[in-house]
Length: 406
Length: 57
Image 1 (cartoon, chains in turn brown, yellow):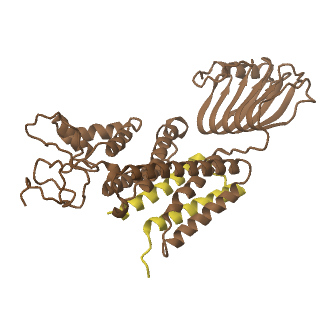
Image 2 (spheres, rainbow over the protein chains, first blue to last red):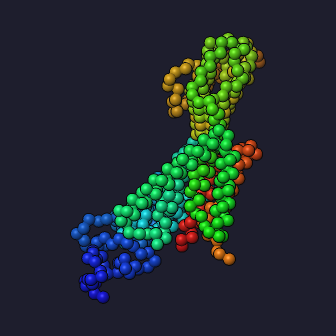
Image 3 (cartoon, rainbow over the protein chains, first blue to last red):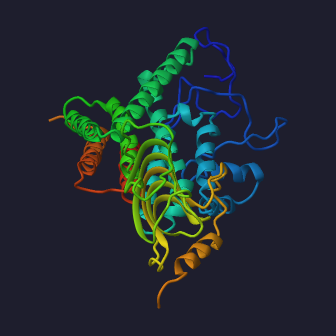
């Protein structure tokens, strides 16, 4: 049929320049498209240049090939730069995924409207996650940058990917036209889904923190077994998202060791004498302060344990007291006289042999999410995450050596 | 016999395994921290996404 002819059944529409472009009625290749904007690719054109993902020069999604065509350079150069950016904080991966989602391909189809592209996106995302899972076996940098800087953002991306996959299934029968009603349906459905998952996630986290994690874990197991059994009978893929919404917060709470009893709020203890000094201070959520500046401490060791679910645990001691500290923190920081650590799975040990003739506080802190701090003064500005140096630590070490017998 | 749905199968087994680990951790049999749980969790999510992506090819 002559492309310039319009039949009564064929509504008036833009016809792609370049006769080999597929039409909605007669898709070419294995990727039918629904949108055919007017454009001219390559060659002399009066229209401004536009960025597309290349279909002919692609390794994954054609982003690098499209950028190379846009700037008129070799695609290999773009790929080398992209790979280099991946190893510089993961920015390259994030930019690539964003471009994959938002930049249309040469036929004008955005990733969110293309089942095959969505499949490639999910596959690529999955490969990245698996690679990170493998790399994280090695004991490097977990406490500094790797988990918060790379894994957490990719985890968020994974969840977003799951949401996209669920909200925009590739089933051609469900790919309806973008009518207002359909868009509204998807928006409402997505909002309800996110709200339900948020409720499930918060509930799972709370249950895990107050000691009901076993029940939630059992529900997760049941959902997993139902999914696996249903795979042979009637697949219930919709269960994946709620099951993960339960499992992931519980995993975070369990890994951080967050235990929240019903004690919530701020607590401050100022024991006047050693008899009032407890061997254990606990709080679920809030700020726990043990101030020993006015405590009459005799020479010798005084042991105490500070256990906190979420919040800040602060120990304030007189300057003539030696402090021997150890702390285990799921996520947060240790600040002992302006030196310490921060990150995840923080294990802090700063032990000193007790000096002769002076009191020594031996403190063990167990905190799920938050901070443990030891200071000589209780000030409001104790949250300075980047002031760590060895000055205070050396002062305490010197104090602990005073009067020690050889 | 019906051919099993690979996504549901992988997701079910992975989620059940993750749930079992979380159960053991909550019961005190295991003591998993972020260094262990994070790779396991992301491996499960990654396996689900991988199965989903491959099933579309």
